[in-house]
Amino acid sequence: MNDQLFQYIAMALYMAGMLAIGWWAYKRTSDLDDYMLAGRGLKPGVAALSAGASDMSGWLLMGLPGALYLNGLFEAWIAIGLTVGAWLNWKFVAPRLRSYTEVANDSITVPSFLENRLKDNSHILRVVSGLIILVFFTFYVSSGMVAGGIFFESSFNSTYTIGMLLVGGVTVLYTLFGGFLGASYTDVAQGLLMFAALLAVPIAGLFATGGLGATLDSVREADPAHLSLFAGGAVAGISAAAWGLGYFGQPHIIVRFMALRSPAEAKAARRIGIGWMVMTVLGAAATALIGIAYFRQNPQATLTDPESVFLDLAQILFHPLIAGLVLAAVLAAIMSTISSQLIVCSSALVEDLFKIVAKREASPKTQVMLGRLGVLVVSVVAAILAWSRNDTILGLVAFAWAGFGASFGPTILLSLFWRKLTMPGALAGMVAGAVTVFTWGNSELTDTMYEIVPGFVLNVVVAVVVSLLTFRHKPEIEAEFDAALGGLKAEPVGAGTR
Image 1 (cartoon, rainbow, N blue to C red):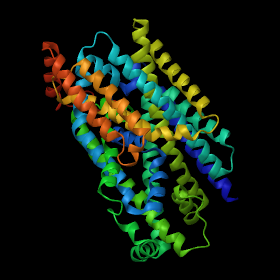
Image 2 (cartoon, rainbow, N blue to C red):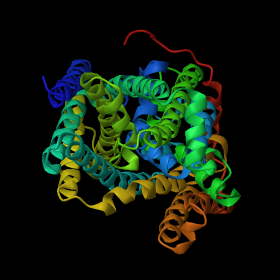
Image 3 (tube, rainbow, N blue to C red):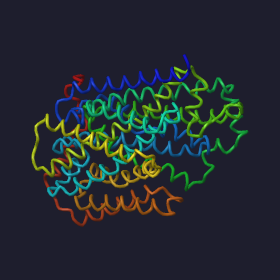
Image 4 (tube, helix red, strand yellow):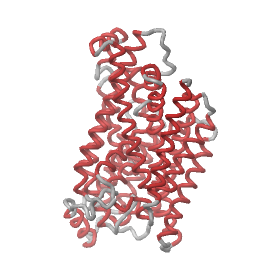
């Protein structure tokens, strides 16, 4: 049996497993709340691993090791910033958002929460938020399909189009039928696969390079600066770490907080999620350094591309079947992000746009059907955008992270922690943050500081100033704010029913 066949077997097993989980979730989905938010029944471990897997994408297994391989440990500031940002998000945002979304008319999407929290009867805030999500995430999903096509093209000598359609098709199928529950449980399986792969590759690599001491010696011989966290300067380090600010505004991540069984369970979820994140990030960093040592010690070995250091080491160090499972981990990272973004796009179409335009409430069965139709529509548009490989789509990923972080991040934080936030203040802040990211990100200023920093700061300033100018005391908002605070220690109702 040749090596390629083993890898095809591993990939087929992985794909079949994802489809099976999607079918299992389909049998447990009956209304829109189930389809979009799993009936607020996610256990802490599921929510934590689902958030981590949907967040990291292929960046964790390819982008980060590639950057560290080329530039050394200085690139780890992005990972450090993201880890700190994720911890703060779980610690402060998760319990409050879980409590407040239930108090605020049982909101199941970020735009509906902002509308209900600020009592915006005009629906302007909800529509603008829904459109922002829909536009950015359609491109985000498309970039994932592009990554899937490139992955199959480089790993299996397949054509780009076949790879893109296969990745997109399988992901769309289990998301279409399984909804949020299906996406969350496939994320768990994918997160565990990523975790195992990011431990196995560096451990096996250390044996191949002669142990920790020999590995570090080889890295120093290549470039002593590769082992320094401070080689790039303070401003560049702050700019890299500022990626962590983006967490507060990523709809596909914070929606996991809303799906927890209770606010109190955010604590357990935080410990699981951050533990997973720390271990996987360390595994990615170790893989890069071990890769430097291995290819220096073995000049006859070929590294196809710095971003493929993880994949190349896996295929060198392991039996083809195990290497195939490692390849599946990369695919898992890509697919977990696509599925989460599809659900958020679907919710924006149905919950935040269709209901406003139609001005009526459909039956639960019809709502689920519309949710699935939303997944299909976004998928088709994303596939059309990805049909011919376009680097500008992939480039939008980093831009979209800053855009979501600077437009939604401060708005979410202020809505949860500041009573005086108003609808005009939230809307003005969101627009200021988005416009700043767009203008800064398309200028030379982006070379000195990541655009999320000025965008985030300006959003906060504008939102606070406009809110103070437009604030009027509203007893209903005050009562809900207090009720949300009072619900922070609520225990899950019906725990263990899912």
